[in-house]
Image 1 (cartoon, each protein chain N blue to C red):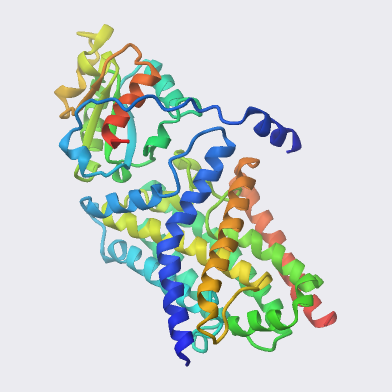
Image 2 (cartoon, chains in turn brown, blue; image 1 turned 135 degrees about the vertical axis):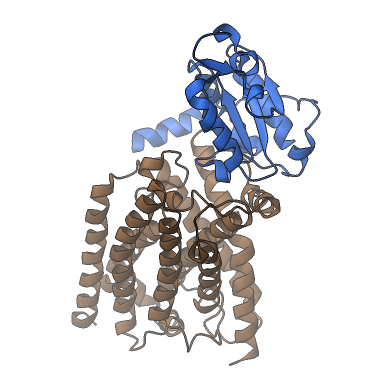
Length: 314
Length: 161
């Protein structure tokens, strides 16, 4: 445990916590510009959150502790994931206690908490959204595990920091078939897990086509603010993990001097990925619900091939 | 995809330059919202004329979203209800319940002549009354249907941008 590690981990949490609404704002702005609109500006998600925090909290009749705790669990797991995943430093003091499996489980815990809350409201849309979310979750989690596992096989460790460090030392590994297959698989599951097009449409008003939004229809005020903030943080963490697994350059090791550079480089990487994702969404329509498992199964096959390739093509 | 990209580049921005900020007085409740107003639209018995105008107010040309207003899917997420049409008997209870589902501070915008005073449907057998007979109204937008400019101006009065 080094001082740089502790400062780095704190910086990660602050950066993700403060920056993730800006990422969402940037993505909406990119979409607005490509659709010919002017857009509300990148600060709009922060204005929304500030307003929601001032509003009245409502717990619908008949909902229990599951409904009330879910936003806290979701935001808590997202914050812990932000501290653990190598975002600006590979020397996080929590790195030893939380590896690839722990991060995947943390993200799954948040999703399951929200799915249970959706069921707890006992509305038709809450239950429908929860069942859809669990379908996506069941297909996404194994693929995240498998694709990162393919990258971890050559390092001999499931520690995310170690995987990123080994890519830093051997940059030629990025263009290996293992990395490329894993990158494609991971890109698809990041899109599915964060509820973007073509799996889910984050700006839809049609309850029948919703996945993530349908579960949170009953949340109001500060609870809704927590849920939206947590979703933005999960998006940032997953995009950041993706960026650092396949292009780790700029990340700080155990030196304090590199930290500010790493923060800037990370912000640029995530902004670039988010902007690309938003621009890609302009060209896409949402997939039919029954086609989503096919897409996710395809990405799972990619991940399995990546694992197989990591043993045969070292 | 390449065709669409070419079209995006050729079209550029279709949003019209923002007009002067209307100096209508802002309801006190809207001040607390700080430039972000989420809107739930309730059709209480409208002929769909106002809906078409709302759709174009949020379309690319008028782009009400740039002032911080956004349509949402649930009254729990909303700060303001936009109600169109005279309130019909079947929608009275639904409108009342939707209003109660909105967390405080909440605002109601009566959009169009029918919502303000029943318009051409006044005293029809299925009509319960104007919106203000069922829920308290904060802002009224006249017109049958109101032009998108008028809708955008009313929403800017709520967001203050």
